[in-house]
Amino acid sequence: MKRQRLTREQSKDQTRLRLLDAAQAIFMKKGFVATSVEDIAEAAGYTRGAFYSNFSSKPELFLELLRRDHEEMHAALESIFEDGATRETMEAQVLAYYSNLPHDDKCFLLWMEAKLVAARDSRFRAKFNAFMHEKREHMSEYIRAFSARAGTPLLLPAETLAIGLMGLCEGVQFLSTIDPQNVSADAAEAVLAGFFARVVFGRDV
Picture 1 (cartoon, rainbow, N blue to C red):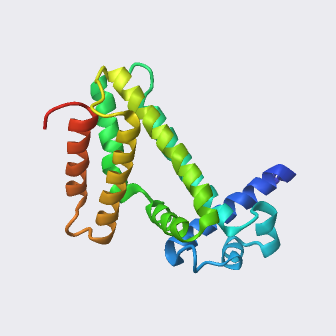
Picture 2 (picture 1 turned 60 degrees about the vertical axis):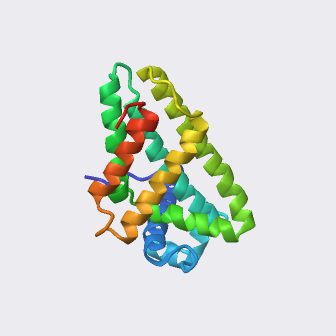
């Protein structure tokens, strides 16, 4: 079968995707600071020029990686609120999603490193904080949507719960990543289940 020739736009999209995938793999292994533009371009099979044809800088690519991961999370949470889902189904799906984060989130280390970079680089911090504000806004919307669909009044404002939920999940993931023997998947699930049952779902535990 004759191979179909890619259009200019398709070729550019493919190049961009390969650069993102290569950067994610290297960042996970070496870290953002230790990785050069040349490392990323070479791993993707392109030149330095190809990198700069798609991204103005390494920090811009880093933010794009985080946005891509956020959009995947956004899609996963959106599916939980499909029309017709019962409260019990939504509760089970929400708990399953967050309980699996400690061992399923392939980009967790990227988010941790992004926070370190933001703490040290004021220019990156401004863009990263704007992105994190957007992320918290989305989380607040999901919490309000769940409350409305399930008929469960919120014990705290949605924005407060969003900050608490994100902080709790990141903390549990961090402990599970660095000390999996003492903070097992079961332990992580128990912590999250208790939080959701009492604070989000409004049930006694």
